[in-house]
Amino acid sequence: MTAALPEKAADTSAENPWPLRLLSVKIADYVERMSAVWVEGQVVQLTRRAQSGTAYLTLRDVDVDMSLSVAVRTTALDAMPVALSQGARVVVQCKPQFWTQRGSLVMDARQIRPVGVGELLARIEYLKTHLASEGLFDASRKRPLPFLPRRVGLVTGRGSAAEHDVVENARRRWPAVAFEIRTVAVQGSAAVTEVAAALAELDAIPDVDVIVIARGGGSVEDLLPFSNETLVRAVAAARTPVVSAIGHDVDTPLLDFVADVRASTPTDAAKLVVPDAAAEHASVATSRWRARAALTRRVDAERGHLAMLTSRPVMADPGAYARAQRAMVAGLRGRASSAARGRLLRERDRVAHLHDQVRVLSPEATLERGYAVVSRVDGAIVRDPSVLQVEELLRVRVARGDFRVRTFGLLEEN
Image 1 (tube, helix red, strand yellow):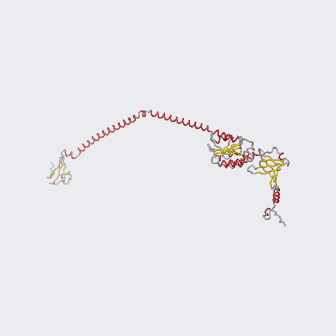
Image 2 (cartoon, helix red, strand yellow):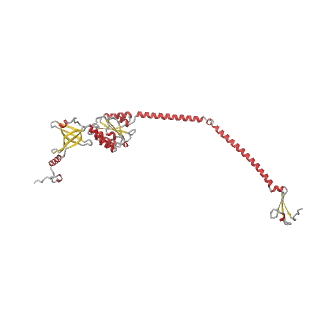
Image 3 (tube, one colour):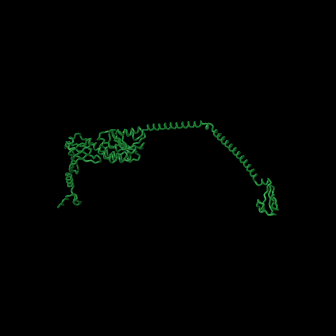
């Protein structure tokens, strides 16, 4: 007797598995219970089968590399106001279906509508506000471009006019400029992925000092990849300064706001990333002329100042000052010598006068006039004869010497 098959997938085992047909039925039953859903995507492939009245679309997610097949009645396509083409963005109401025989999942479209330009612009504006609130567009995040990059990275379309404009105009300005070019899809479903990958590749090259993302003008739909959130965030995360050169001056994709510098056109980007060699040569020549003129004026001014100094009498006859100083020193020395001699004579006269005074007033002068100094043996000067004794030996000093005498007594006064 055959064992009963498990009712639930969790009840299966290696000994009691489901047959493949049962799994397909279970998946189809599960998918059938799903509700219809509205999805958005970009048409990357469109195939019509007139015999069956069915068309098959391949829709790609606008942000990541993921696609899904959608089956739609050709009558629904014919009812659209604008013919559907590859690259168009649409919203589709579809019901998932699982084909048990092939084991594949398809989406059965019930309604399909194009995404209008107005709605796209509204979504871009909403994303712009959201990214601005995160600070991705702040001026403080902007990095200055190098004056002369060692190598310029360029992300642009294959064989595009934008590539020619950037390269030729840059080399016209600075012939020695070196480029590292990555050609990618710049519109369509693969644009975001390829541009972001090229940006990351150039950002990893050490001597690439600036990266230009360039594309010519186009419709709003054509420029949608450059307002994609994934690409905008990739530019914000790059370590190398990025120049946005998308479309014309009136085109403003979100890449313009996150880039470090916005160029109005690819030609303008060439002017921004390298200097103009002719202008720099002219600037150097002007600076040299100004420096030479300033130096000439300075030398002329100093020469005039030197001539003015040398025209002064003291410079015309350098010995005049020395002679004047020598004469002044000689005069001072003469005055000092005369003053010293006068002072010496006066002092000599004063000394002689004092000497005469000393001689007149000295005891020797008194003795010369006949006076004598009488002293006792012990040297005491006799001033009062009453203190003398009879027969006392005395010393008498006169101008020419001294002698000894004895007293006989006091003389009587008459």
